[in-house]
Amino acid sequence: MKRFVLIFLAILPAFCLSQNSLQKNKMDWFEDAKLGIFIHWGIYSVNGISESWSFFNEYISHDDYMKQLDGFTANNYNPNDWVKLIKESGAKYTVITSKHHDGFALWKSKHGDLNSFYNSISKKDVLTPFVRAVKKNDLKLGLYFSLPDWSFNDYTHHTTSIKRYNIKDNPERWSKFQKYMFSQLDELSKNFNPDLWWFDGDWEHKSEDWNVNKIKSKLLTKNQNVIFNSRLNGNGDYETPEIGIPVLRPESRYWELCVTMNDSWGYQKNDKNYKTPMQIIDLFVDTLSKGGNLLLGIGPESDGTIPIEQKEILKELGKWTKKHNKAIYNTRRGISYDHFYGPTTLSKDKKTLYLYVRDFPKDGKIVLKGLRNKINRAYVVGNGTILENQTICKVYWNKYPGITYIEIPNDSIDKYYTTVAVVLDGEIDLYREKIGAIEQN
Ligand code: GLC
Image 1 (cartoon, rainbow, N blue to C red):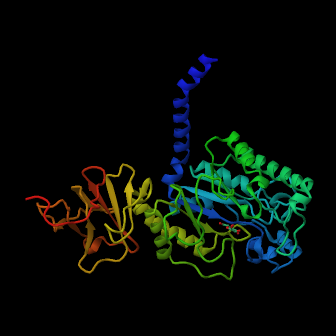
Image 2 (cartoon, rainbow, N blue to C red; image 1 turned 90 degrees about the vertical axis):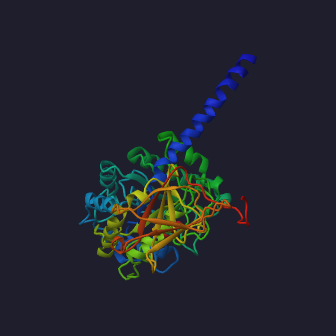
């Protein structure tokens, strides 16, 4: 017995270490990826109404909502073109709605009776070819899966005014739902082996009722490195603020802002309230500087066409991400606004600081305050122009490192954000002390 205890104690640190490195490695690609594209595709694109919520909130009857199955043609669907466009935007991963709250599955599922293959006019499994194209093109794959299935007869909720039953009064019925949910998850995990699970709808039940632990352990058996978003009643690997850029940086080291290009997740022909590329890049840069990822939504039409406005945004974004890739990918959150009037990121080794310049200063000079390091080189990312710098207010009699002005020539200005790489003599070292009078003579 004593021997066992000794052996156990001897291997414990190695075990803990490997658990930690597993954890770390698992999130590495995600933390480096920075940009993902979120696809909401389903029968709601036929009428151009809100995904699932339109019948749940009783703006349309469930029967009429389901009539959209006859309009989901996927006639112009070309998953390779989708993936090409996603890559062109600079995204490193994509998340697609395998099944939204309405229960309509995009793959040929053996479970339930609502999917694109058996029930829509398209008679196509639209998910399989998409996954193939994603994997062939080295993008990471995320599957969105709604925990609630408002169309499934043994699920608790149907619409805002119709609740079928309460779990505690009818546990057998809930088990039927659970059996169905688990078989679909098994099927997805076996057929598609995603890198990330994007769950949604957890608010409707408690984690014990969903059986979150079992969900996770089953999916981890298939892929021990798979990542979970937090919409498993908070039991995930990263936070998912929605729509607005968080004013305060999320507490979790890993987080992802999901945002729509207009005001809708799915395709809604009447929603023309698109954000401009500038506004989308604003959101992206803000997210980057706070160390997060941006998951940008698109909503294809029912025939598989990606609306022109969405295509244009992705392409425009792509030009900017391509040019500024050094300042974007593999970076970590930047420094406090105390030191620079704008967003920043840092290289992983913390030896290069990237400054994002949105509005060109009147005198062409940007200001960096309290930097203890020596600047080895400063240049404009994407065009290589070397920049001059001048430090003021640095005196020998105190330790305050002064204020550095870096001048950007007019011809280096980007129409969105210009980024400046400041290559330091070591890891960034910022002066954050109170400035007094004479400290030495
Ligand atoms: C919400 C909505 C849903 C949308 C999702 C995307 O949870 O229920 O319609 O798919 O957010 O983040």
